[in-house]
Image (cartoon, rainbow, N blue to C red; front, side, top):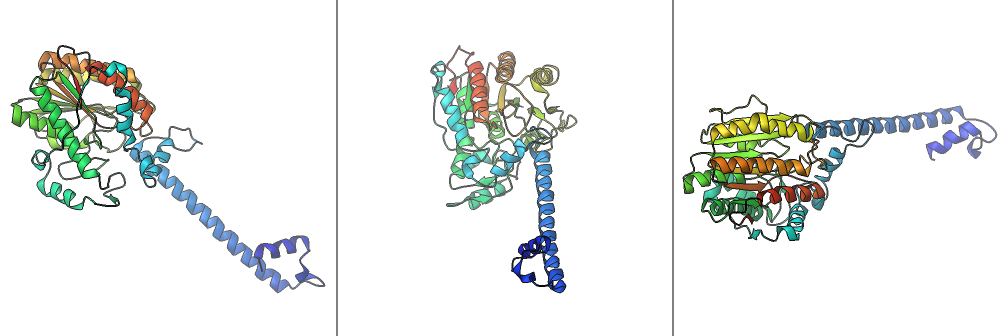
Length: 387
């Protein structure tokens, strides 16, 4: 018999079982059963609360603070949970490129010269990545289904081609700019690359497209000094690791801190003082972002005098983005792009190659790409390109 029914009978005296007298032993047993069930339910609730708090804590540590108020559901937690369920809801998803193509189809972008990104080759990849790592990644790439390398980074049957097109696109754009065919180029590819270290994929990233393009420019075009400027909201730990001991490449980054991947402190400067980190706090916004460039990054770049500037163009610092809370606006990306163009005009013959990194709110991504590419189109002496 249902224990809850027995409890009701005890309370209201209506269960026929007890008509004509009360069997207190049965009542006691029923009460014990009810208490056991109630206790199990309470333990389950407590475990669920503990688990929820742990998930929230982990998500806060990885992708930013609670932006929904102390009693609201973490937006960042919700986006993180999507990572483990429906593929088309992943933050890093094909809709990102569709959003970019959609905004660049507007009439104001008709002057752009467009092309499809070619696939890169393994010789290019090993300019920055360990040969054994590259071979193993190629070996485990699935022909069906999906494999998870870590909580953020997964491979499907199309991943290998996508990452090789990211490499090929960055290199092809670099060749076009270095040859003088174009002043600058914007490469719209996914997945991003700046978290990929020499032998470690992470944070959606497998190969560091921008780092590979920089090394390629040095080897093929004789560039003595290349600079990588990264304004993605997450620090480009991979690019920093690759160029840590390379005095011919300067890596500069603004990023939110603390935030994934946990690197990018101001004191991380590289073996040759060639790493420039300008971390920003949650909610710092456009004014402090611009101040970091004006007071820290641009002066160091000017002293370095790069012959080519490559941009890790992450747009997840936009205020709409679910994975962080730096709160930039489209006009901030326009501003920083124009500042880098001014520097490139002085030291690099105007040569800039920009490669898409993060940006996970589709509307924010559209606004930011439009501002960034619109600024790049200001260099009108030769046609620009969007690859």
